[in-house]
Length: 236
Length: 115
Image 1 (spheres, one colour):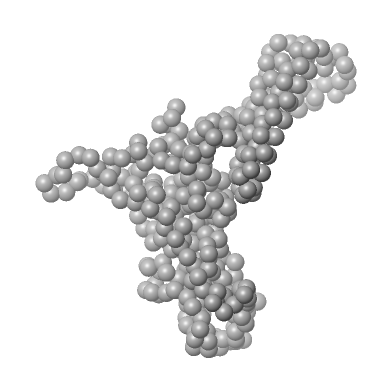
Image 2 (cartoon, helix red, strand yellow):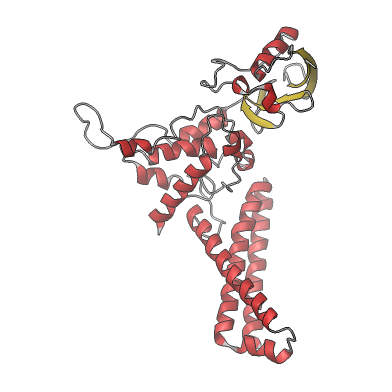
């Protein structure tokens, strides 16, 4: 059967009192399309549909959404990975305020990212050419720098749903560790002292929802564990 | 940095460590008690009372009781900050939990050394 049943979350705060689910029929002609292709076909049926997308190849991180209950990037998620019983349910990323349809307000997510100071801090004198790293030191950044900030991880985390203003969230903490682990960064003590409260790091309960959904295959839970180890050895 | 004043250790890392260490102590006590009950299938008052007359057993039990109190303080504080959004209600619940835990510890000391 090539007709796919799609249920789409719709909400326009200017005209709708409450969100609702709109049903669509899409003829996929038996092809295993990416979910984003299907959304583009829906847009042809109903041009009022709002969603974010840009590179359509899993690099920009614009089209994070909830597909049949699991967060992911619609451009790199094939129908065969998510569709069950010929039915696809599309919702915005959970836990963030909806601007319209699948478009969410990422303000609180970026605020937590800003809080961990995601830039290199170094108080040594500027070298004449560049700051050198050994290959081993550079290897420590693998699995950390690749994050594209799509927010799939943080919005699948119950601790982030409950306390998005206090818990940094898996995406922010992965980046926090990316700078803690960087041999060129000299602000380690200051960075750790900003994370030593019961919320910022320790609200992580290690349920690994973040690892389960990350479209880049990264492991924020492991990074959080390493931050916790650094805090512990710093404080004992 | 998020400031908190009603959690047990005042910092996330100390709360985290207290929760882990207290969990280990509670596990040791549980294993000991289960083993003791298995080795005494016909447990009578004399054997039970004799066990708790020993000073090391009283210290071990008090340590476990303090671990339960600390563990519950950390755990219930986390639950209250997750689910109770109104701050006056949250502070009330946290105060009630701490007062109850304090009462249990004092009562436990009385039970252990009072007989």
